Length: 253
Image (cartoon, rainbow, N blue to C red; front, side):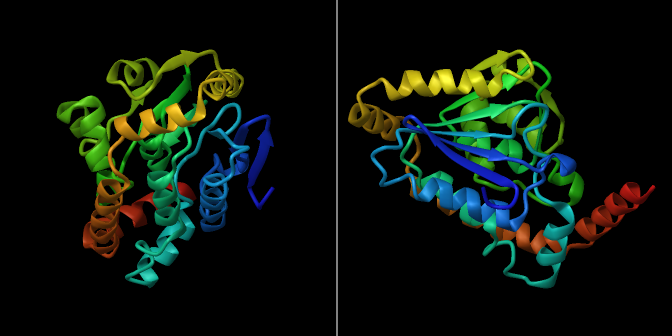
């Protein structure tokens, strides 16, 4: 366990659990770097055949820890591009092991965009997905501008990434980025079942097939870099500064 992250290896599966319930699992720099390390160290470990990312029951993640994010992002022009979030996204892009997401509750911002790097996504019937970047005067991140239209088409991607509309679990399944909808509180257990199914398959064949059906890592990291550059510029824009002031004012009331 590192801070608000629990990493456990069970059988042939590494389970990465975000545990910051008092903040709806909002992700800190420390958490991002710990998740990145958990993914990176699994790559050359033959004992680890599959990965699961979960937030436990009731919440997946509210996305970035906004206060920490704004503090670092506005103080240093390069903070976004060198952040733990970008390191984590690079780890996802270069990951060669099947990765399962177990989403119970809200998945906001990077909580949604990270799912498009996953191979299998389970959602509870109460799960919701949103990417409110534009509402904050920002732009999409995590290669979502590349992966979301590829997965669910331009129109649905526009609705989420540009209009900032929230999608529920059933609509996410229809859109193609959720495989199955299960009862609240059961996503992690179901994810373990899927992991056992994957781990029972021939490992080398799985790795080759997975590589064939995914975009090359270089395509994803190139878009991550492009988005991060624009995101960094937008952090200091009048629109973003105004949006974050309004956000913090609402929190205080």
